Amino acid sequence: MFETLEAKPADAILKLIAEHRDDPRENKIDLGVGVYRDAKGVTPILNTVKTAEQWLVDNQASKAYLGCAGDPEFCKAIQNLTFGDGSDQDGRITTLQTPGGSAALRVAAGLILRAMPDVTMWVSDPTWNNHVPLLGGAGIKLQAYPYYDNDNNCIRFDDMLAALGQAAAGDLVLLHGCCHNPTGMDLTVEQWQQLADVLADRNLIPFIDFAYHGFAVDLDADAYPVRLMFERFAEMIVATSCSKNFGLYRDRVGSLSIVGASAESAAIVNSQAQNIVRTLYSVPPDHGGAVVAHILNNSELRATWLTELAGMRQRLQGMRKLLVAALSETAPEHDFSHVVRANGMFCYLGVSAEQVARLKQDFGIYLVDSSRINVCGITESNVSYLAESIAAVL
Ligand code: LMR
Image (cartoon, rainbow, N blue to C red; front, side, top):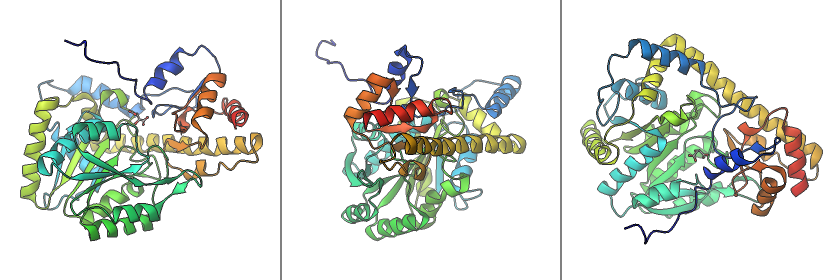
């Protein structure tokens, strides 16, 4: 039965986990997959998560199914976190709990195909490695819009607007809410407003992938694009993830919010989404969502979580500065200043695929072929070695 199948290459990001793990060199550095690491190189479980888990052990009364849309308390809490407290005055936002942001994208793809089978979705060039396989693989027609200028390490904003100016009415535009993956370069407030004008003029529908909420500036500033689009558009889609901001990577916690033109339309979309969920994974896992709901609904835990989140964000910003300072010593003739202009975990280092291969082979430094680095892998103790190794391959 399976003799016609050929082996598939491993995912370009996930394969780095095993490659780094299997490298015996002591000074190896992992700048690959997007997980947070602290100054000791550990991906910690947040204290607030531990507390909420203990609370669940002591208080959760049942493990019975919650239903295709997940836990209503989680959905409400995430909806408020994303769109703002009390934003759903007229019942136009419907939110489902999903197994991570990836499942939110997949359920959204199913809904889009049911509603508009021939629609085109515009995705940034570049975008997260899995966007095209996940959304394109689900059957959505994709088209790229220019996003990043590799020569000048900045956003090609005019080119982006010009490309979207060619999109057909009703097309969807996939946007990264903040901490663009892989480049880390986000639009300014003014650029988001200009973009919203173009989308509105062309009658395009925003679809925001919001996987790094809280990792750029703070919860409210990072949510600006979502809230702006919500104010201006009758319909939109938002996929969120609690992998990063709650550190719940392997527990798979995310959400899908759909804004409908009316409460009636949102209810119909919700029923369709639940129908899709039933055929994909039936019901989402509960544990991580219950943890998040408990943290967000308990004022003391929520305040502590905000501090933990700020700590992660500040460490990322600190490591960016540290790397750029070290590179200014080891490679003074090269400009790496864009590294500190980027937000969140990622940015492009700006070296070639051959140089990435040499960093891996000769120095045990692991990053994605595109030269995307996860700055969480940088520590005070490895930054000099990292900067020397980068200089050696330039
Ligand atoms: C990443 O981009 O590294 C993360 O979003 C993890 C993943 O699944 O690719």
